[in-house]
Length: 279
Image 1 (tube, one colour):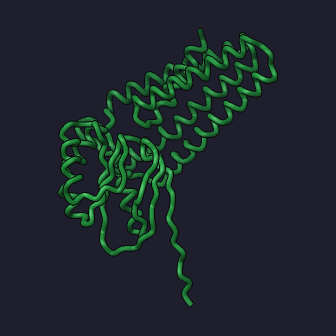
Image 2 (cartoon, one colour; image 1 turned 180 degrees about the vertical axis):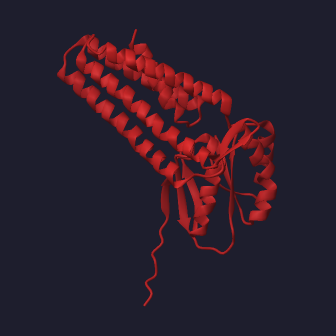
Image 3 (cartoon, rainbow, N blue to C red; image 1 turned 135 degrees about the vertical axis):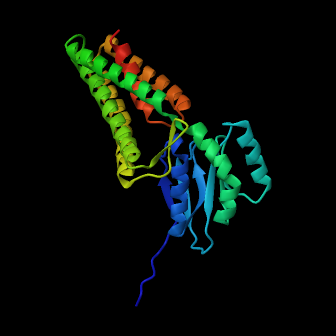
């Protein structure tokens, strides 16, 4: 007797970066092979993806487009809305189309996706220079912070030092994942810009670890900060803790907007926190 497998709808957390648009599309299409079709998404950056099980023999392809990125792309998006493209989900930033036929879908969206990938691609030389500069500044500032650990309140110094180290380590998980896929040939360079066509399992694991660590850093830092404020009655410490979290929130929010869901914001936050704390 053959036992029938019980298929259910599934919810997937989406941690694909903004430059992995092609890789995210490939991930969605891979789900259709297992019988899962995209049926919804939540969040500004499509943070949560919902897949419904509906086994079908008709091949499906998806096209994810970023709105307000280019005037020509926006015009073609409007044309696709009135054409044969089926809208699966959309918000103020993204729109996802489903095409019943892979061939038709590719003909319609190939030029748009190619242009979008170029616009969303990461400038290789500028990115290397920018990340290298941030990393050097963070390491130098971290060394200075360690040398000055005995100045001021030790509890606050160890709290801030632990946060800085955790942010750097968190950044490295993501960065190593990207670096691995570039070496593995998943990163494609077009006109000096890099984007990713797919992901390796290794990178996916590192990104998942990075997500867990990022959540742990946030939750742990908040809990330790509150415990520090409650146990040590010192106005100077309270001001330093509140200033540190104010900087974290401001830089975190602005970098999220500027870097469009990119882990580089972790390094940026760490650099601002540690350099400003030296004043």
